[in-house]
Image (cartoon, rainbow, N blue to C red):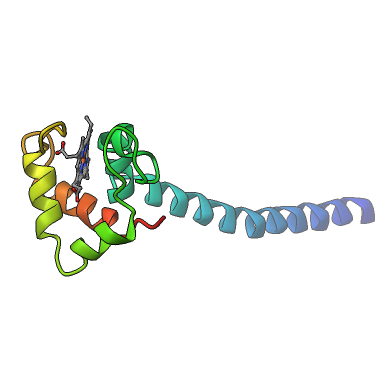
Length: 116
Ligand code: HEC
């Protein structure tokens, strides 16, 4: 009899312990997926720009976007960046048709955070 009660208490305790551990795990997981879900400026950059400008933006086939000199140019507003991304250039493709205006804005915001 006593053993049964003890087992009962132990089970209760284990269930309680499991739920206490499980709750933070679940919230941590959903936070991570919320972060990965949807396309952030960083992801859009990786998908569309990194092959020429490098994963960190420091250049490759295309110029270094992280240089202090370029960052200075874009400090005041997004306009130059948005224009360039929308229209492209001599060797750079235009993204005006491929990406939505909002996505271009997100990429521009991201590009302005790049540092060498
Ligand atoms: C096919 C390669 C290629 C891809 C893809 C590409 N670029 Fe470029 N990018 C270039 C080249 C080359 C230049 C240099 C000027 C030119 O050809 O227009 C350039 C120039 C730029 C400039 C102007 C730099 C300056 O101050 O002169 C910006 C800003 C830029 N790219 C951002 C982006 C962003 C953001 C993306 C992604 C949406 C992207 N590029 C995708 C090749 C590329």
